[in-house]
Image (cartoon, rainbow, N blue to C red; front, side):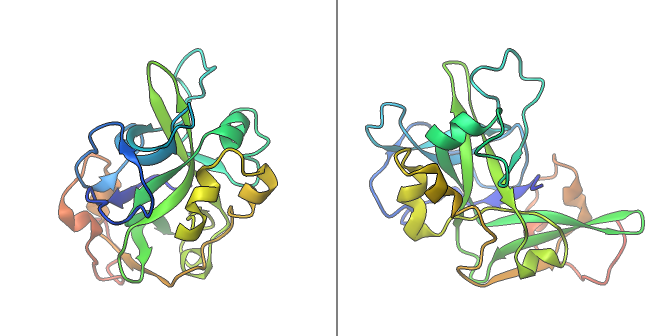
Length: 222
């Protein structure tokens, strides 16, 4: 699963088509975690246009009677058929913006965080689904098997949607079978990875060094 990522709050020039702001976009996060609000692009329920919104990470379906279960991820292999996610995948696909994500490597008793980014550190978009109710707006990332870069550290990675497919992904008229073709390991552009401080294992840790490289041979918890 993907349980942390980072994002920039300046998305100027990133989205190549018209959209409106539905909420104030939260400030940049270096260690974004479930239950926090992050920038998500979605289609208005009236399908009148695209909006950049602030949604809570942790999916709660509209029919849920309580919020006791709010997964951060949905498996790509079952997202279109699993009862919890099926309707959202059919009708409410969205894009969550990031400039990197984290996965953990287990060495003995230590869990060592690694950060994964595009080679040029640019912003990209996770394939996601959302749930919209009068009381709350939530989302989760879709995960898949890893590409060659992520596979060295972890057996799953979040789905990344190439920019040329953003409109098709967001459009509920896109057939489910076609949308599922985007739920694959990302290979569109080169990626890189590096070790980061174990201080960011704590979700409350928000310092900038959460995204800065450390010596990959330093197998200790700071």
